[in-house]
Image (cartoon, rainbow, N blue to C red; front, side, top):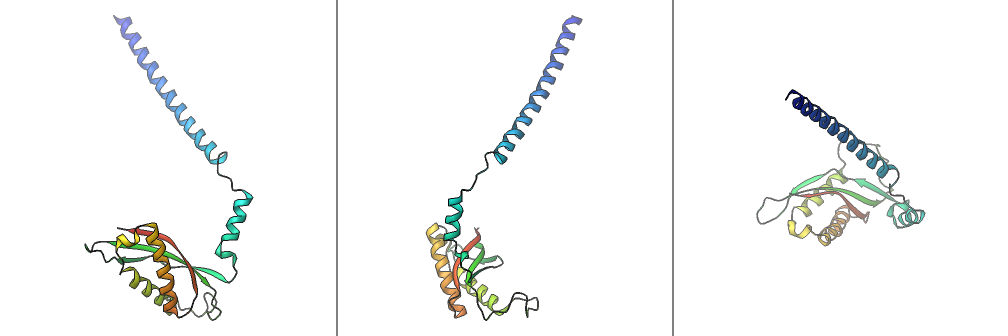
Length: 170
């Protein structure tokens, strides 16, 4: 009987070692798969893809610049009244020769132009219903409206395009 107990203990010890070895093997395998995927199978851009991107990019025009606005949070005009929109926008605009160079004449505050743009955006967004801007088509229509509203506010045709860098409806 004592011999049977010793054999059972040996089997339990052998199974424990087997599980540890199997666990280590699984971890090593996972690390190897991730390494291969990251370094060997990483997507490579082709020369033609780079050319197409450069040709179609609005930023190849040296008269254009981007301006990233701080995120804006507004209440949407949903019937329930409990929907919010958080949006961050990057404007593609023509370089304005009348604008001062970056950092010149700033006292650390927000410029009047920036305040006017944010006010126009808040006014437009707060009049929207979440169902109007939830779809892809709705977002594109909103971009066009924002461009028109900002250009009208500035009384200049500066903004050429808009990119949403954050768009959260809650």
